[in-house]
Length: 189
Image (cartoon, rainbow, N blue to C red; front, side, top):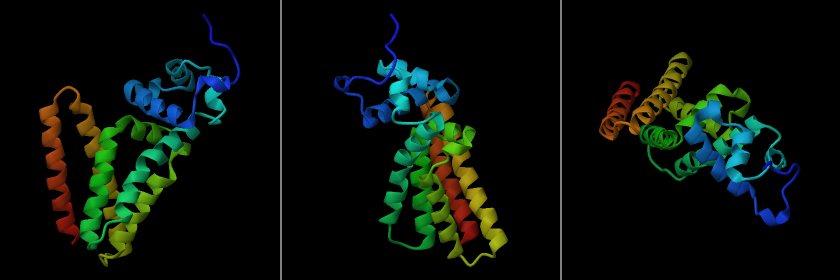
């Protein structure tokens, strides 16, 4: 049986929230290479055109997913009140935990530059702003910005890779991330 073409009827109940929730599930299950509008439509039991009604392409969908997922990181940060070191630690820890929950989303963003979301850019902006409070010279500040971002990405992607097959090792890697982040912050501050 083939799916009907065109937009879904109103009574199908497909909504933006349902599309986004299912997209995250499918993306984390299939990985970025297996994630397509057609695959998503199959999981939703609708035609791909129904998704295109909301998003012009796959990159726009991934960008919206990224904005939605990473908005919590910036919202948590905005309410934090403490010194620059503590705020950096909180920001990167929240980013790490979110990335650990949705590693394939991060990989999809990495492989689709036009999907780079405003919320992820905001995380980098906030981190840079906090590093300015350290009085590091601009070249050193840029170096530390890149080190901290790459360290966090690498850590959550490595931990996510082993988490399904070896939860104990994943837990140790998570603990190591926090220890190593402290060491890096000691060098900055």
